[in-house]
Length: 273
Image 1 (cartoon, rainbow, N blue to C red):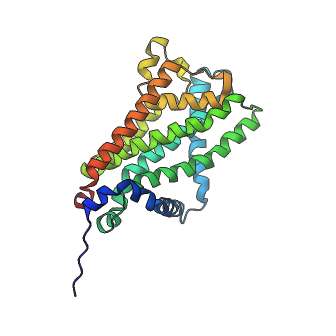
Image 2: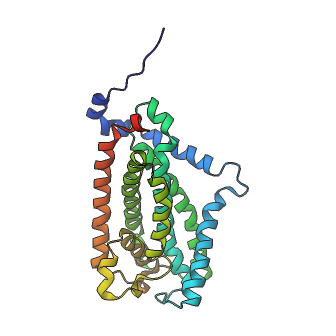
C-alpha cells in the first residue's frame, strides 16, 4: 500500500505562530546538533570559539594600535578592540550560518512540516553560544590590564538584545534570499569580510569626522558596537546618540522586513530547495 505525505499549508498558516511555540524544543535540538557537528573531530573543540576572535584582536591591535596609532578612548587597545569583536563575531557568524541554514537542512524542510523560522533562528542561537564563550577572553583581558567596568555595564543585556535582533533580522533576509538565488552563497563571505573593515571593530568610531558620523551610522552594526563599548568601557567610550538611535531604528526595520519577506518566501521553500 502506497502512502502519501500531504503538508496542509492553509492549516499551517492559521496556526503558524502557535506552532512556533509548539515546536520550541526544535530550537534546542537543531542548535545542539549544530554545536556538536561544528566541533566534531576537532583537536581543540570549542577552543576555536576563543582562538578566532583572539587572533583577529591581535592583528587589529598591531595594525591600528601600533602602526596606525589610532586613539583608543583612554583604554588599553586590546580591550577596546575585543569589546567590539564580541558583537561583530556574533553577528558575522550568525549571518553566515543562518544564510546557509535552509540549504543545509533541505532534506528536513522538504519532508516535514514545521515553522521554517526555527531553522535560521537556531543558527543564531549556536552563534550566541560562541559569543558567550568568547566573553571569557574579554573578562581575562580586563583583569590582565586591571580595567573594571562601571555602572554602564548594567545596560549590556540591552545591547546584547539589539545584537541578537540584528543577527536574526539579517539572518532571515539572507537565508530566504539564498534559497531563491544561490548566488548569495558567494556574496555572504564578501559581505562579512567587507563589513569587518567598515564597522568600528579595529578602531573607535570617534575617528570618523563629526559631519560624517550620522551617515556612517547607516551601518546598523555601528550602533551595536558603540553600544557594547559604552556599556563595557563606561565613561571612556562616548555614545553618539543620533547615530545610535538611527542604527537601532534600522535594526528594527531589518527585523520586521526580514520576518515579512521570510514568511512570504516560506511557502515556496519546499519546492525550490
